[in-house]
Amino acid sequence: MKAKTADKIATAVIIAVSGLIVLVLAGLLGYILIRGVGHISFDFLTSPPETIRIGGGIGPQLFNSIFLLVLTMIITIPIGLGAGIYMSEYAPANRITNFIRLIVEVLSSVPSIIVGLFGLLVLVNMFNFGFSLFSGALALTVFNLPLMVRITEQGLKGVPREQKEASLALGLTKWKTITSVMLPISMPVVLTGTILAAGRVFGEAAALLFTAGMSSPRLDFTNWNPLSPFSPLNPFRPAETLAVHIWKINSEGLAPDASQIAAGASAVLVITVLLFNFGARWLGRYMYRKFTAIK
Amino acid sequence: MEHIGLTAKDLSVHYGDRPAVKKVSLDFAAKQVTALIGPSGCGKSTFLRSLNRMNDLIPNCKVTGEIWIRDKNINSPSTDVVSLRQKIGMVWQRPNPFHKSIYENIAFGPRYHGIKNKKALDEIVEQSLKKAALWEETKDRLNNSALALSGGQQQRLCIARSIAVKPDIILMDEPASALDPVSTSKIEELIADLKRDYCIVIVTHNMQQAARVSDKTAFFLTGEVMEYDLTQNIFTNPQRQETSDYITGRFG
Image (cartoon, rainbow over all chains, first blue to last red):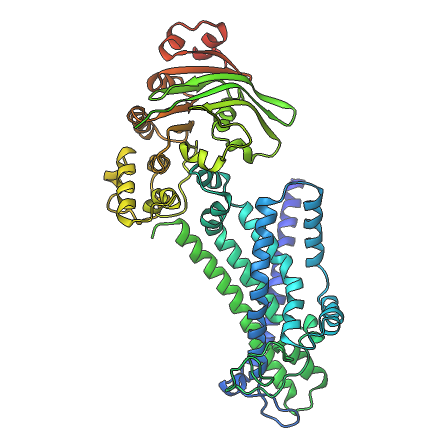
């Protein structure tokens, strides 16, 4: 009787807590979306921001966010995959590799503002990259890399041992076994994780304040020469991202419609991150089916 | 085609300090099926996995002694393990086809070993599947996922996959223990067929299976070979009490 009562109470508490979490999340998302969605229009998404007049958009910021994401992933994916493959398949089980694993864990829990300051001191000042997309991408790499390494390592560790042995028993080399048998099997896991990591990068602000900077030059979207300072493609120009822009207009925006712009930009940010998440789930499921089930 | 056997000489395997196989010497002849029987944990699977150096993958596992193929000791450090494994096929307890199409499962190995010609690959796929008695069931759906096949079909696919790279020896680790009786008898028929071309070593827990498919049988107990003889002698006239107890089901 007593155990049954306790069981009922525990069940009720757990349901209440989960309900609360869902409610808070729904409320938060709903509030952001309801406030912001009305402000989103094609014009808003493409035009540059205004300093003191109404009617500014977030075009360059949106472009910067996406471009920075691409740059970060170009740096992160090869290094992260390489390190993950090493940790899973090549590293011997000893103290040194356990230490590396610990460092990776620590690195992933460093607050992003610290990463930003590190970026300012080392990348922007010491290496003289200045406030630039490149500095921003490197700073984001610092805190994206641990995730990428862990995802790859776990993905490969999840491959059944018989799959690996079957390939080796056919006389294939270890490297070929990894690339042709193991990576395809772990691809859904790795890809899903990568997209989730990308979503995190997209919403990051603190690490970028002091690395990618808080301003953008007047971008000329007809100039595709990556060496020109006004070209959107130049990785060595400063670039304010969407998340940083929201922070900036909320704290020091002078335009009369600053709060609507912040709300609209927030909604765009949230929708994009949600798209990343749903996209990751869908793609993960799709690839899992493609690799395992009947065509 | 030349037929090649395999000889193990004083082969020992240790996991850390714990001995799993103790100085086993066995001779496996070409065109013969040898069964390894014995209770769980007697070291027969560990011994089998040493023959194609698969135990190299397991940390803390140390294999000492000699394994001779022709005039080469393949357990020496200088052996090219990768090309050695091409010559020794392996089939596992649970079917483990690659997560690829039926065609790709077979073509994967040969293509890696240098056969790029589409026609030659098609030919290998067809021959391998025919040898594994799977061609009739799969010829119309070679591009379907191998994972859509039944367990017994998957196991025959795995056998086809290993013969596609033209090994001399095939190691089988309880190849039918995860299958239903019909699939099991198909695998057994297949083993009888394959015997004409390969040296086959099979680990099994099933006494009747050992009696049905093998020419010679080795009885393992606590890491040692108690008795090794023609299968009919082992089952009708065992020389040792332990062997007799085991095959009559008194322990194990």
